[in-house]
Image 1 (spheres, helix red, strand yellow):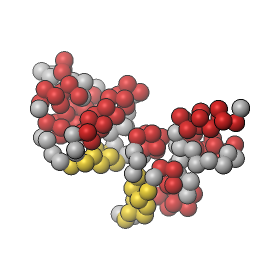
Image 2 (tube, rainbow, N blue to C red; image 1 turned 45 degrees about the vertical axis):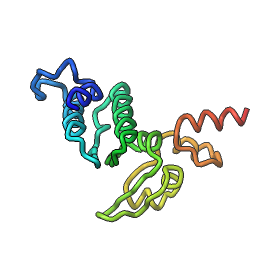
Image 3 (tube, rainbow, N blue to C red; image 1 turned 30 degrees about the vertical axis):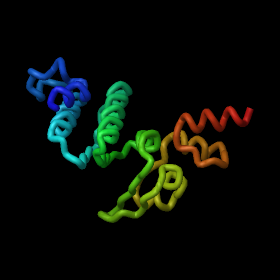
Amino acid sequence: MTATALELAGLTEYATLHPYSLPYSMRKFVTIAAVIAMQSKVIILDEPTAGQDRRSLDRLTRIIDYLTQEGKTVITITHDMAYVANHFKRVIVMANRHVISDSTAQEIFWQPALMQKSYIQAPPVSQLVSALHWPDQIVTVDEFVEYGRGQS
């Protein structure tokens, strides 16, 4: 399982290096690989998107998809609402140590009072849709493009 974890995390060629000799963004994947290798049924990723570029975010998505397909429960804690909107069907919002919503991104990001209470902001594309006064509850760029095509 260790080899699979290293491969998923994109770390195979760095397996012999000390983790602190790697850049911060790669060290996150060392931690993720270690958790994968433990073969836990539930995996909690705390801010895995922080400091990641597009390529690393794509790798993270592949890891989460793989773990989900393997029957693992993956809980991701993040402030990257665009990533949340693009990759998760279920979104749990917490504030003051309490769950204040458990729903879909479309429902959560169109509730201004909820977002204010939890100090989160809708993804940029949703903010644009709101400024354009479009009626749909769009939360991803793909939804934006699809809606725009229908308006032509």
